[in-house]
Image 1 (cartoon, rainbow over the protein chains, first blue to last red):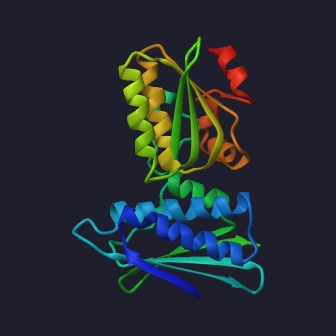
Image 2: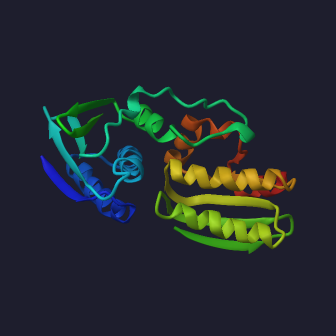
Length: 134
Length: 110
């Protein structure tokens, strides 16, 4: 798997997006599908930047590879506080303008655009696996 | 992300170019906030050159729409690219913020 590991700060978002843009392109994705991959990755990373390390600084590692010739697998690792966004309820997407909240929308987007998404906690690490079928 | 602002007869036309992500979107909030403070309340946002939007971008659009609601103003979106339109549809935002096929149609609706 190709990988990139950087400090979990918003200033590094562009570097992660450039990495996944290149990696998904090399694996044959183009156009709208690449944008959906970038969307899933941005939403996952921004959650980590904002919440994983409340006490200080930490790192986040992203890996990607094409597996079995058809599964584009992205793994995002951090050593922050345990956080399983997937277990939270989906946001109410029918609320009126006054009651609209953005919280939870990012994870919801990942679930909607990806073909598969899984969370696991191994030792002291959060692992989010996002799969797009080629 | 780049913003291009034009004052038209019926309202303010803002063309957004590039990407509205977690890094760039706060700039949209700031610029639109400034225009609202100057007394502009009717906006058409031309998204024909917007290639990408994330939940951060939606947050900025929603914040602007909420500000305008309190001032009896409106924000209408026009000419969305397919992937941007998809994000508005998945989030349900397409039911709370009016979306038009073209800038002309949106301007006519102001």
